[in-house]
Image (tube, rainbow, N blue to C red; front, side, top):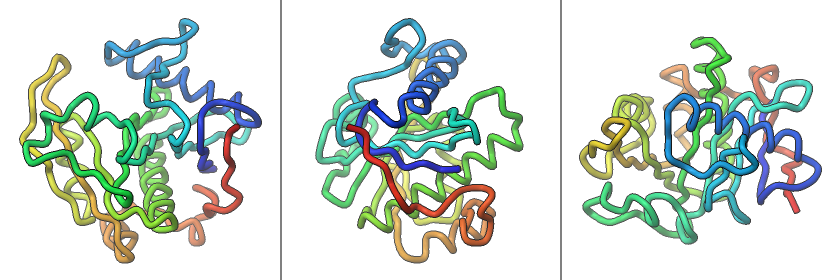
Length: 212
């Protein structure tokens, strides 16, 4: 089940959100070796996990984190503008209809097939959320191998600059344009999951919850 969670940590999603931060620490710090903040020894939480941040979270039936990604409005603090502006030689795209997607977390305990299923469900929910909120463009930063995959999923997408070599390998910035036909474009490549057609994968984005 996909949950759209707006805001920072708080009730009633303490367990889900904390298990998300714990999975992020296991994946990004323990496995990938990222030099990012760790809170209380086991939670990966940085300066962008703040009020105004939106989390798209796949939750297990018992309310624990399975996979997630993070969305932030570009008119506030976000990674491209604050940490990696050099990835966009033409300037970092910003505006009230532009949001950034980061921290795609697909834990290694899931097999490859399940990780792909969860990835597709998260992307589908992100597109649905964007269409509902009037978000027209989503930017982000990815390892170059995955950026190429994202750019070829079928939606209107573009590289925002050449890949840049960093400690963990080359990374690059991208932008995808969200329009009414984006679900169909992604569906052609087997990426988009329609909740109405496959309700076991995720729920429609109703009853969205805000954290206090």
